[in-house]
Length: 270
Image (cartoon, rainbow, N blue to C red; front, side, top):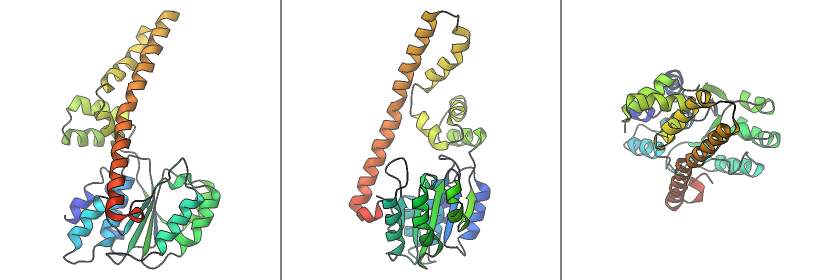
């Protein structure tokens, strides 16, 4: 795998990619990637992490491939189990930062959904992020920065990854095999998230839901029977919309279990 192939996983973020390519040559201790989920912040984090682990040796291709597959033992991803990052998550992050790299000269710690960290968590992480071991690099991923996170954010280099345009998502989906009309519909429904668009592409009922929503204004006739019928249809469509997400979560769980079998809990992000 070449470096360009590594960065090709980050869609529609040329400014961020250009900045990170340059930054990888002389990295600092911490970065904060700001943007909504689905805009490529996680892909950018793994691409950047992979570029930090190469050593200009024969092992570089292996480092890059493991990084992009989320399987490199020197990349630790911390993901909140519930709605927020907790103190025990902060303790895990600190432990990971203190561990020496296994295969390369650096250890990269990716912290997902950092915007959910409460004040005590931000306080607990401040010293670790501010003065990490020389071999550790932090990448914090967040939708935005809350007031109690400003201090820790100020210790990081900020990289913005805005929501993707409908044009970028449409073109990407067409390249991945979607028909143009369907790709455009998926882009409209994705609200700037390529991940949401891909998830919707696996849902055969997405067109039915779209047509249902479009039909509501012209069907309303001020009668209770019509409203009741529309509500029933909406509830049925919402119920069916859960299945692609359930399937996605099951696949992610299986992938996590495979990572634990290969690298142990330490390398799984648990």
